[in-house]
Structure formats: C-alpha cells, structure tokens
Amino acid sequence: MDDLLVIGGGSAGITFAKFGASLGAKITVIEANKLGGDCTWTGCVPSKSLIHAAKIAHTTATAARYGISAQPSIDFAAVMGYVHSVQQQIYQHDDAPEVLRQAGARVIEGRARFYDDQTVEVNGELLRAKHFCIATGSHPKIPTIPGLAEAGYLTNEDVFLLEALPKRIVVLGGGPIGCELGQALFRLGAEVTIIQQGPRLLPKDDHAMGAALAQALKSEGLQLYLNTKTLKVELQAGAKQLTIQTANNQPQTIVADAILVAAGRTPNLHNLGLDAAGILYDPEQRIHVDHYLRTSNPRVFACGDVIGRYQFTHVAAQEAGLVLRNALFPGQSAMKYELVPWATFTDPEVGHVGLNEDQARAKYGSSLRVYELPWSANDRARTEDATQGFTKILAVGRKEQIVGVHIIGQGAGDMINAAVLAMGTGVSASKLGGLINVYPTRSQGLKMTAQRSFTRWLEKPWLQRALRWYFR
Ligand SMILES: Cc1cc2nc3c(=O)[nH]c(=O)nc-3n(C[C@H](O)[C@H](O)[C@H](O)COP(=O)(O)OP(=O)(O)OC[C@H]3O[C@@H](n4cnc5c(N)ncnc54)[C@H](O)[C@@H]3O)c2cc1C
Ligand SMILES: NC(=O)c1ccc[n+]([C@@H]2O[C@H](COP(=O)([O-])OP(=O)(O)OC[C@H]3O[C@@H](n4cnc5c(N)ncnc54)[C@H](O)[C@@H]3O)[C@@H](O)[C@H]2O)c1
Image (cartoon, rainbow, N blue to C red):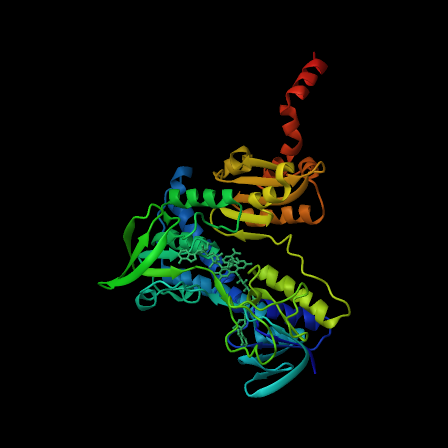
C-alpha cells in the first residue's frame, strides 16, 4: 500500500514525487492533464519567458539613450516558439513521468476523485493508501460581468497559445498576473489597458510599491484605470466594447480586440468527491486545513493553491515538504507563513517579505521605524540607468528587528532572498547595515538602506553638537 497518494502533479505534486520517493516512501502521483501543472504550462515558466523576450524588445527599442539605435522587429509567433521551447526543456528535465518514475515515484495519468473516506478512484480503479494529499491547484476566477462570456476572453490558460498578438488588449485585474502580462504584451507591441477595481496595483504588497509600479507602467505607455468597475461588455463590429465606471463615476467605453482576465483564482475542488471523503470546504471553495495542513479527514492533507493561502510555486513546494513530514513521520510540525517572500516580475520588479508598512504600523505602532532609500543613491543603478526604484526596511525595537522588506527595482525578485536570510536568521537592521557588500552592486542598496538605522543618529542635534565639541 502507498504511504502517500497525491492528487495533482503540479508544483506540490512533483515535490512529493521527488522528495518523498528520495526518502524511500511509496508515493503515487495522479495527474489529470500534464505533469508540471500551472507553473510549467500556464503560469510561472511561460510568463517569465514571455517577460524576458518582451524586455529584450523594450531594451532594444529604448537603446538610443545609450547611443545605440535599433528598432526591434517582433515575430510574435517566434516569441511564442521561444516560450514553448523553455516549457519543453523544463518539462523534460523536471516534470515528465519518466523523471518522476526514475526518482522512485509511481505516476498515474487520469482524473482522480474520492470514492469514500479512505479510497480514491481513478480510471475505474479503486486505490487505498495510508495517507492522501489533495494538490489540485486553482483556475482563473471569472468576474460576473454582463456580456463578458458572450464576447469571449483570454486567461492565463490560453494566452500563451496565441499565435498572433491582438492589437488592443484590456486586462481585467491589477494583481501580479495582470501587471506582468499586461506589461509584457505592451512591450511586444499591443496597446494595453489595465483595469483594476481597487485603488492600487498589487494590493497584497506594501502600498508604496503599487503606487511606484503604476507610475512606471504609465510612463512606459500603458493605460491604467484604478478604482474602476467594468459594467458590461458588448460585441461591436467584431471588437469588444467595455463600458466602465471610473473613480469619478463617469461611465466611458473602451474598445479592445482581446480581454485578458486576471482577477484572482478559484481552487480546483470540482468533482473531487470531497463530501464522500468527509472533507470540509467553504463556499469560497477553500478546503479547511489545520496548521499541519490536515483536512477534516485525518488521513487526508491538502496543500498548494487549492488551500487558497499563498499561491506561489515556492509555497506549494514548502507545504508539500511539510505534509511529507507530518504524514510519514511521528509528531507534527506547523506551517510558518511569516517569512513567505514573493516577487512580481514586472520591470521594475517588486519584491516582498514580511509585513507591509500598514500591517507593521497596526502591529507595532510608534516603535516601528521605516528606512527607505531611492535607487538613485545606488551607483550601479546609476551606471545601468536603473534608478527607478527604492528599498524599504521596516524594523522594530531597540534591537532593530526587521519585520518587513520591500524592494522595487530591477532584480528585486532576486534581492529579496537576502532579506529573507536576514529575517530568518534574526539579523538586525543595524547588523545588516554594518556588513561589507560588493561595490558597485544593486543589491548593495539593501545594506545601504539598513545603514540608515545608525546613520540617522548623525542627524540628531545633540549628536551634531557633541561631534562639533569633539572636533573643536
Ligand atoms: C500566469 C501565472 C504566473 C505565475 N507566476 C508565478 C511566479 O512567478 N512565481 C511563483 O511562485 N508562482 C507563480 N504562479 C503561481 C504558481 O503557478 C502556483 O502557485 C503553483 O503552480 C501552485 O502549485 P500547485 O501544485 O498547488 O498547483 P498546480 O501546479 O496548478 O498543479 C495542480 C495539478 O493538479 C491537476 N489536477 C487537478 N484536478 C485533478 C484531479 N481531479 N485528478 C488529478 N489531477 C488533477 C492539474 O491538472 C494540475 O496539473 C503563477 C501563476 C500564474 C497563473
Ligand atoms: N510573480 C509571481 O509570483 C506571480 C505571478 C502571477 C501570479 N501569481 C500568483 O497567482 C495569484 C493570482 O494572480 P492574480 O493577479 O490573478 O490575482 P490577485 O488576486 O493577486 O489579483 C487580482 C486583482 O484583480 C482585481 N480584480 C478582481 N476582479 C476584478 C474586476 N472585475 N475588474 C478589475 N479588477 C478586478 C482584484 O482587486 C485584485 O487586485 C497571485 O495572487 C499569486 O499568488 C504569482
């Protein structure tokens, strides 16, 4: 009998197969479509490949300021060919059934559902296991807008299959998907309008990040509507006409050739037989799990996008590791979410870890200190004409404990990992500011921001007076 049977072979499922089997446990992964899940086929991998190609187009088109003149000629089908080739490479190397079998896991292709509280059915076969894990991921949430379904729309599930670039694209949603793909498609030649129903982009990030990103996207040429509701969509002479209500309550229309819906995610629970297995879930379609990622059926765990917490590949993988620990070994450990980092791979990128400023202020009040440094103070950023950005460190207490770091700027997604290391190992802001970093690097900006925790004392009048006396 299997030690663990996993439904879903995406980011979490693949971690189960590789890591679980390497421990010597009997692991079966059942996948309904293609191993690799959202990340390889409809998420991280194609979006980051498209963003890379789009950045090259943008860099080429704007190279005149460096004394280099060129105009990119963009073959959209070839760009998509590049995207698909990266997907194939990653699939063959990391996700394919033979890779997981080689690692020691059993792979079954088929759609699984619970038959009862200790049995799963797939391809007409009933399978029992000591434990189960639901890792079925999520799919795009489609807002209820009159006429949207009839007019037709794209989501992350089909945008990477486009063979030609639509001329005018409206993106519904100003979260990470809308901002990343909106900018990439703009840079590849589309006219892009992002409609965000809330007051700012990236509302899960620090408020200053969304505002800075909005400024960057607008200055590049994207149209942005914040606090805006889409009232209806109509087909007019083959094009899609959206009637929107903007912040000042003025209805107006926008005409587009394609609408990309990027308005959040819904967990994949449909037809899973959860009731037959005694697994509780809520009307928002989230499975209830405890701190140990166990559902209301003690044999069954759930992790990844399906539990609707932090919907990232690195979190799905971390949660899968925790489920392996709790299902296969005595005792149990809880998932810790305080140090979940993420990055939005726009240009400039936005990196996040810990509390944002509003959360930190609500929690720590006047003991919160905010250290900020614009990238214009960083020499490497200057040499690379990448001064659009800033770093923000949130610290508390006499020990200057770091409770949040937020970075907007080129490469912020890589840089945020240093902040994770500092926070995870209890390095204070003053300690971080005192370390030696390589000059000239953009990541030095993190250290330079942390340095504010002690250089700010130099601005105190009493210290100024004392220094004047000392050097009299
Ligand atoms: C456009 C986009 C860009 C993204 N970019 C990033 C990024 O840059 N960084 C990042 O960290 N995250 C990113 N994400 C999020 C990331 O893709 C997800 O958080 C991650 O894939 C979740 O992993 P998972 O294992 O929970 O689900 P998935 O990877 O979606 O895997 C679930 C699998 O379960 C299968 N399945 C479903 N039902 C059944 C069933 N009944 N039987 C058998 N199999 C079933 C599905 O076919 C699927 O393969 C992005 C997402 C999108 C949409
Ligand atoms: N770089 C990354 O790590 C990355 C990239 C893409 C996606 N993701 C993951 O995928 C998840 C889903 O991304 P997402 O951007 O779809 O979701 P999201 O929930 O993060 O953002 C969606 C945004 O759309 C807005 N919205 C909802 N309905 C709307 C409507 N009718 N009109 C206009 N705006 C509307 C919401 O206010 C929200 O801000 C992310 O939260 C993240 O976990 C990660």
